[in-house]
Image 1 (tube, rainbow, N blue to C red):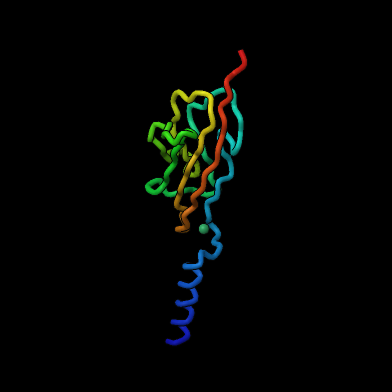
Image 2 (cartoon, helix red, strand yellow; image 1 turned 90 degrees about the vertical axis):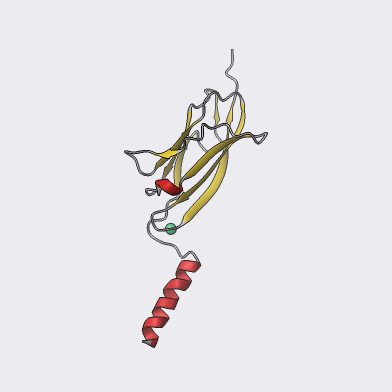
Length: 124
Ligand SMILES: [Cu+2]
């Protein structure tokens, strides 16, 4: 049984080190995009991942530079697109915003990051 135990320990060590796994969800696209500047305020921020994510553990929020939360706290994984996470952002004015997200891949890895986008006042 020593050999079997060694294999088990090796597997646990690999898991603890976060060894690369096949079904690791990474952000592949965002609207607005990373560091994008838009002239039309987005009514919704959308994030597409490479794999489906666990809805119960998905977090997505949007913040102003002053540190105020500006999303409607209704982040959800799309019912028909399990790799799409979005949240509504009503009434954004011009400014720079930070998108924060944290998702759990189906392989158990947590992916957490943030990026910014800017809403520029439309020319009149
Ligand atoms: Cu993974």
